[in-house]
Length: 238
Image (cartoon, rainbow, N blue to C red; front, side, top):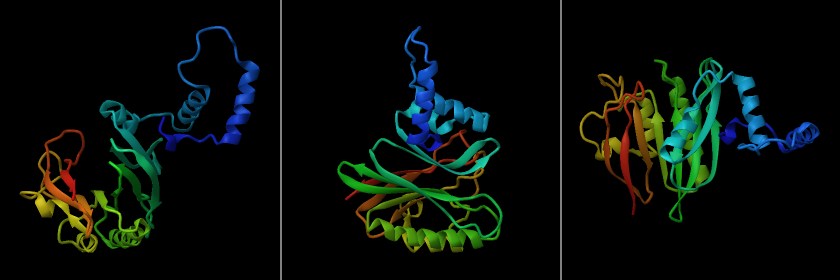
């Protein structure tokens, strides 16, 4: 189970472990899953009813990649947030909730520091507000600008659904800090939505400016996995 879904701290687990010792039956085969992991799964089922599949865990198992998921809000008995799959070691990660200017879906910025062959790379993943009024998107872009300073000039890849098109105020604000990988090396419109007949580009891969990380190529493959098409890019450390 993903660590972000667990709720037992050490003190809580010690109490549960003591209670389990009183009722543990030595007969039978040893369990395939540890008692703490099993109890976390029972608690998760009790909290959510588990009406949805655990897609981050499934994708991790299918790809063999490590997965970091961070929940932004609970939705219909499940969790709604951002996830990153990576083959590189994760040195640390955090999630920052964006400010909400009006009632709606809580948005967040998932941030990972990866060890890429001895060099640190920051990955940021987000999905910002979709409403026609761009006030909250612009607020999120301003918050993003402030968060960048926490990473001391490390190279950063920012990706996600930004719910705005090239040339919009939101796009222009983010472009002050990042290079739009598709604009730099993509060919064509780079449209990603709707997946069946895409006509808009609102999903982006951005690379921080003045860093030794260069986009080499970008493309949008066909896929039926989502209502958006994915954006794929090849990057290179100088």
